[in-house]
Amino acid sequence: MLEGYGKKRDEIARQVGIAQADSAAAVAKKRYPLLAAYDLCLKCSHLFNILDARGAISVTERVGVIARVRALAVGVAKAYIDQNQEKEETVAEVVNA
Image (cartoon, rainbow, N blue to C red; front, side, top):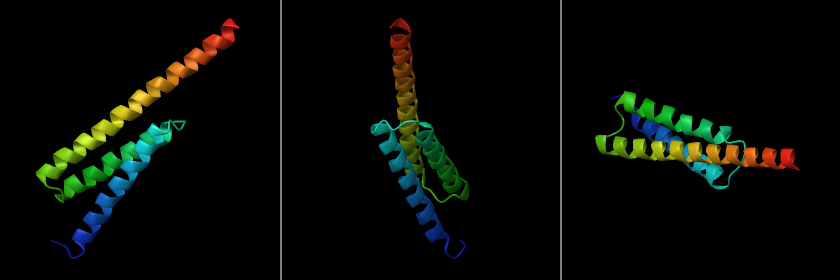
């Protein structure tokens, strides 16, 4: 094991948590555009893949992180669909007015 490897693992794990929290907050506040929330979701996935490739995450942690990233991606997708429906309704109101 490389010296300092544990610190790097902890830093990457911390970054996953920060990106996840920021993305979830953006979706919860319905901040638009949702591209930023999606970008943070991808960042979570990428950082998880780094941890997984290095073997720095246990099997139990792996399952939990995958579930959290998946739930985050589903939340962003649902918010995106809601956003598009709102746009369509607004356009329909303008056209029908």
